[in-house]
Amino acid sequence: MAELLPAFVILLVIVAVFGLMAWGWRGRRRRQAHVPAPEAVPADLGEPAAHVEALHVATTLADEPLERVAVHGLGFRASTRLSVYSRGVTLDLAGRDPFFIPVADLRGAGRATWTIDRVVENDGLVFVRWMLGTTAIDTYLRLSDSAASSALVSTLLDLLPVPHRAEGTTS
Image (cartoon, rainbow, N blue to C red; front, side, top):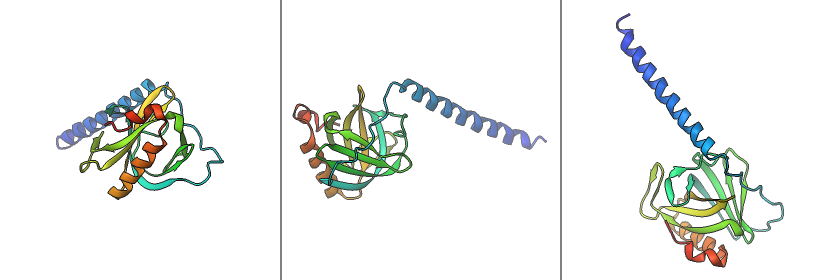
C-alpha cells in the first residue's frame, strides 16, 4: 500500500491540473460570450480570386497575440481552406461550419513570426485582421509555401476597404 501512495498523489495532481485548465478555458469562453458567431457563407459568391489550403494556427484578439479567442470553434488548431472573393473571405475550418468575413469587416492582413503557442521562421504565418461584431480579431494561418503566403497577403490587402489599407501591414 505504501508504494501506491506516491502514484495516487501524482495522479491527484494531474487530475487537479487538468481540472484547472478546463476551469480556465470555461472562464475564457464566458468572458468572450459577447462575441457574436461569424456569418454563414452566402450562396452566390461566384468564383474565388484566390484559394489556399492552410493550417489555422490560432485566432486571437487583435494586437494581442497571446489572447486566444475561445468561442465559436475559433480556439482550436485545424486544417482550413481559405477562399478570397470580391465580396469577402470564406474560411472552412475542419470540424466546424464554414464562415464568411465580408469585405466591410476586413481590417488588415500581413505576415507574422509568432502567435500563441507557435513560433515559426521569419514571416512564416499569414494573419487576417477582421471584425467579429465589435471585437477586432486576428486569424493566423500557416501555408506551406512562402510565395503562396505573399500572394495571399497581397490579394487580401487589395480587397481591403480604402479606409483600412493603411492598417493592413501591422503585426
